[in-house]
Length: 185
Image 1 (cartoon, rainbow, N blue to C red):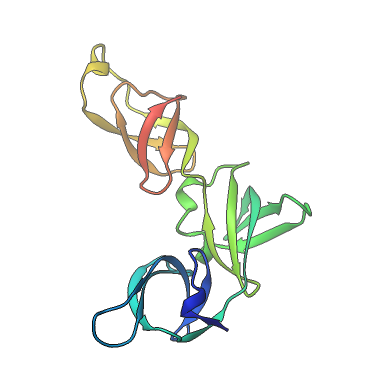
Image 2 (cartoon, one colour):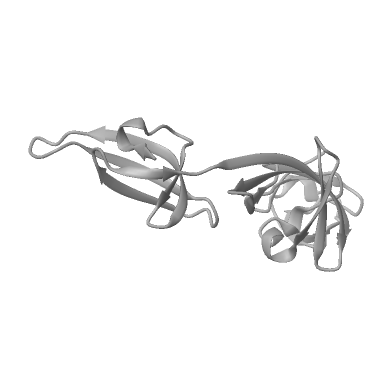
């Protein structure tokens, strides 16, 4: 159990039966009444953020959260196979847990896996990745000066908008959070 007086950023607690991580907190002493703790919490399973106010001295259950680095190896049916970098153990993860990052899973990419009480709750990819364009309409001379875009298909099968000068076989850098083109590599 942990009290509001021991709050720190990054601590994982159980609030009303749901797992949250503290991302920001502030002790507030209004002119009248007891002190309160203002807190911004990020849900560990779905990533939503809420703000709450707790009375001073409230207690919460501390959660055991472990982060592990794993490398994506290959897809087999509806399972995605990852390898633990420390033990070399392979783990098959179902699509339901991978669906948020599925569009940018290329072989050899490292992913941070978050386990809550030994249950996988989140998979995070690096913020940017380098990925190959497999299908794009050919560009026309002079396209590099405009800021127009076209649709390009990446090696994972996802379509994103890219500048007109990008062609088949180009390696590009993509933001995995937004799915937007950053630059040609």
